[in-house]
Image 1 (cartoon, rainbow, N blue to C red):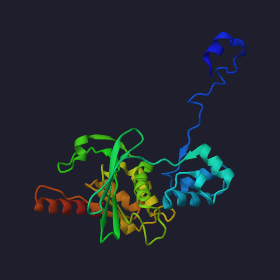
Image 2: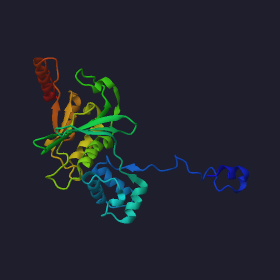
Image 3: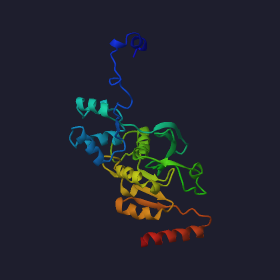
Image 4: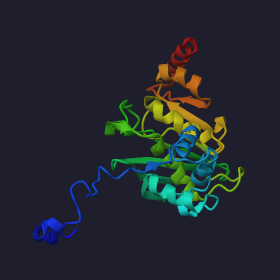
Length: 271
């Protein structure tokens, strides 16, 4: 916009305050990355498309690691153009990626507010198993003595998109999933930064995407949630999703740890 013209000839200015575009009037594109199957189906129905487009989109995102609608060749050109206007596929930004001699790979990722989280891919069995350690929070409120994350203090919960985005980044870095026998990520453990059960409403939807065949198609035995022992939420977890559970028993002595684990198990059984 040329301000000098507007100042010298106000009567012929082509813009009025009502016509001038503003940030508030620009519709925000929806990030499809963290959407469940049900949410994706609802999104496509809302833009006047068929529900089956949801499974196509999820496969492009999670199987192929694609974030460019123009590259989605089984979608019509008008649909691709529509999606570019109303949606986006936005994962965390990669700030650092490094690999050690044993094949372990680490990423430092920047999430929406500029905070950083870490995720680590750990190979085993001569590379046949590749376990991704995923973060659920920025910082942590529990401040366990053996854990450096708690020293940072708690900042916020990660969204479902930011949690599944760690799997997405790792898979894109290793390569797209071409068949069920050659998965870039074979196992996931919710054992990174934060206490997963204190971010329950975002962690569970992200884990459901890990299990979904249109997502990452992982077996329930290959997705593990690790907790310090948030007992009420452990009971709820068993009702909502079928994944493996690990309880941290890090305590000053082995006897103390064993007694603590027995106590936790008895409380869970009685719940």
